[in-house]
Length: 201
Length: 138
Image (cartoon, rainbow over all chains, first blue to last red; front, side, top):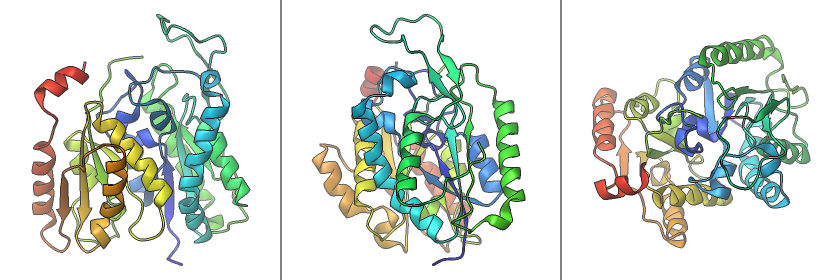
């Protein structure tokens, strides 16, 4: 056991924008506002694997939830979840305050929202960003949460940085994140209680 | 979608550098990486059994290295294998037909400002050859 810490699980691309699909990188490398907000509040960072990069490669087309919702992709996400879950479990068992910052709008890493367009498929010739945003977890986050639940761990309070919502609003995303982090500080007396986790979103 | 701002360069980082202990005499590695336009691939904490996670990391390194991205590794003295899991990574990258990335090791307890300058010089000196850039970075 080490002294309980504050640990933020981060969607892979929040530390590495090179993981994004083509035309999706909004920063050269690190999503600075996210990292700055977390470090300012004393969070340690734990990067999650990028499921899309490992599955479809760095030159993949972009896609929506329904395109990734296949048995093979879910199985891949389950394997990644098994790879990172022991580390997350060690944080929680240590009494660390763990939060998750995903990527809203992402088909994989969305927390509050994911992208949806059931009719997408075939030649990727859509001239406009015409996908819909729906309130739902992305597939990777769904599978990660299922793996953590299977281990008897509480749901991790989570929010998303709204990078993949179509029109990215950095100022709005920053406000959302600050509000979320503020809410965690108000809930701080519960930190370290492995029985008491609640999802904020 | 929109203009893509990716920097095409990635640093594998020892966990002890990304999450330095408060008061540790280490440079602010994230700040240096940001200034040099690098993304981060975080390695698991030194020690412990992280075989599956390292394999996943090796998949990502190979994918980047095979498609026009520059990859380097940054460790810290005093950690087992500088916190880089070097022996395991060597084997995993060989299996993926990928070379080991250039490595830089930061010395704690020396002048953090000087270490930051050394790190920045190392980062700025690494990229892929021009013909490879033209091939991939369009």
